[in-house]
Image (cartoon, rainbow, N blue to C red; front, top):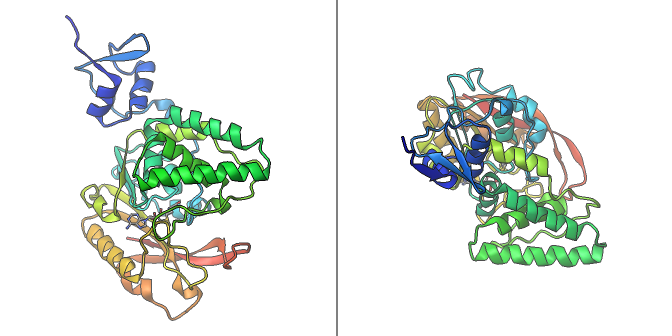
Length: 354
Ligand SMILES: C[S@@+](CC[C@H](N)C(=O)[O-])C[C@H]1O[C@@H](n2cnc3c(N)ncnc32)[C@H](O)[C@@H]1O
């Protein structure tokens, strides 16, 4: 019998996974009757998507790190937050959503530990989301571009590094203004994150990224091993540039949801809420709490983190009131405690669960 074939790109589209993932599945002989002509995989049109979409050697073993440093990143709090993962995660709760993904420390912890049928991440920052999509779908080109930046930047002295940094920043902003989302923009995003002051992402009122160069002596601009592992892990993840409320159609009673919104500022000097041009004020926190109640009624399994206003005002019951129906735990986190960012201290943060 003659077989009709489709390309890896068509299979990727049909199965909702990355082209790279399809190529890995072909190379691992996990799709019957595939054949290679030149450097192209040909896949029988009748082939079914392999059940778990991942090889067993990938399961639960690789440790994955965020590929960018991100304000409010949760790498330090993984052990506290992971103690709140439902015991049914990876079993009857087999979907995961992280609507404010940022650097994705919790996402990557979960993807490295559990087999899930579906995952959904979103963020309002379109340049960040473009970078996630390129890591998932185009990691080889991304790695090549990052090595080119690394090889050009590291041998230079500070003065020439500055020239390169600011010309890359200008190019990044040019692409951002013109809403060009491609692998060049993603490589610039990672380059700037690795070489700017404190890995900050900050934009001015017109939306232009304006963080100055940092003073790292030998920054790793291209972490090939981690990028490749994260790319594999993201292969079945739906990645969306959207407001957090658009996750509503994904989330059901089989979904574990982690919300890490911009924190409510404790005082005006310690505040950092401008990841983009929008601000996340008390009205936004109230709307989010209403959204959480709606999902909780639907049976979703929810963890949410936020700052604890009681650090500065023991009578401030803002979150205790908003999340009266949930359980609220106070945990100790190590955070910057002054405005010039050179002093760290323990501070209480909230973990809210249903
Ligand atoms: C505290 S950070 C998340 C940090 C992340 N958990 C980590 O480990 O790096 C909050 C994120 O929410 C995003 N954000 C702000 N407003 C949003 C909205 N309305 N919808 C979706 N994402 C939003 C910001 O761009 C930022 O990346």
